[in-house]
Each structure stands twice: as structure tokens, then as C-alpha cells.
Image (cartoon, rainbow, N blue to C red):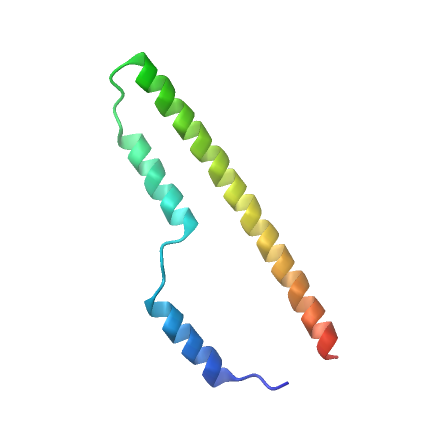
Length: 85
């Protein structure tokens, strides 16, 4: 099956203009917002620390999911290549 470079180029150009922020960007902006907060009481301090800890665990989970996605995409590519042969 021949590769359609025109279609690939068109898809790339169309997606380039409509890119939305990635999940990592959202996590980073949320992290910056939490770091800029100033707690006014001990309760606020504890809540802020819990929010930061939750954000760290979300970031770790997202990183693991991205690694898993990359691994699965590689396996899929290998399967597609072997199917073509």
C-alpha cells in the first residue's frame, strides 16, 4: 500500500492550526497556580499541601499512561508492518 504524502501533509497542516493545550500544559498551569497561593491559616496550608500532593500523583499517573501509550503504539506499528508483509 503506497504512502499518501499529500494526505499526510494536509492532515498535519490542518491539525497544526487547531492544536489545543496538552494535559501536561494543564497540569503545569495548575501547579503554578497552587504555588502562587498564600494560605492564611493552618487549615489552608494543609489543604494546599494535599492539593499539591494530589497533583504530583496525577502528574506521575499521566507520565505512566503516556509511556504505556507509546509502547502500545509501537506494538501496533509492528503488527501493522507484519500484516503488510
